[in-house]
Image 1 (cartoon, rainbow, N blue to C red):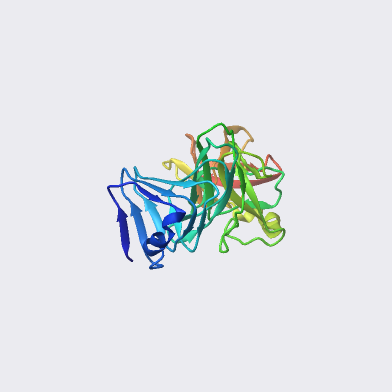
Image 2: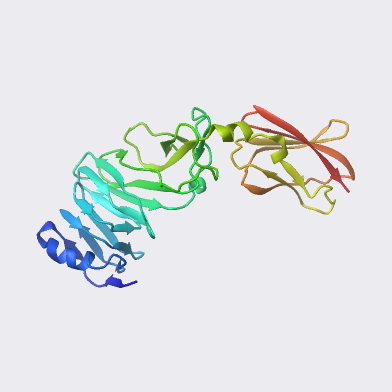
Length: 300
């Protein structure tokens, strides 16, 4: 792969220098251009690019709103949109290009846009209950943040779910996908309002909804548990939400309650209190108590 570097000087590309830009950005499809620390690269007008552009830590890439950026090229990292207009923002992550359309309303607006080709569960796994049978993408999200200006938010459009995206490791089987926005507490369907923050997709899968709460998918291991163990380990499907566990002894006395237990696909655990040898039961509920199961636990 060929690497181009913009190291010392600010670079300003405008439609009047399009032929030069095409020579620099369009000569090799496998090229990557790096914008050096302390530099600023401007995109303004009509740009044709076949390259990935990567800013270093203190570099800045600015694009005037309503400019056009065509070809296979894209920016990995933060791309700032300035002024008012509707812009198809050419963002990506490594080899993945995934544009997003951002509409700014005021001339003093500046918005930072990034694309992340990674699991949005790092933001949150909580989904609006209105999205019944919908599951969050395992694959991607966009980040749209206000830098400055008098607009309180921006209108988002023009996104598309990645063709290989999965949702709880599955592909949608029913109503397809919906664009969602993280409102600070959960992912909800994005309805075209002016906001900032994180955007991703949810996919509908009614097959998952019918088998997601099969009690056999929740298993205590190892079982028996040793008194010297510090945790009680269990497996559970990551699609369950609001998992609550109460530990009971054989007489039915509650020993300890665990609320809103984080759940990940595969191995999970809770702290084990001080207990004597014997038989115990874990009462497990999820989705606000809509689904419950009880598991026997042996302590030796």
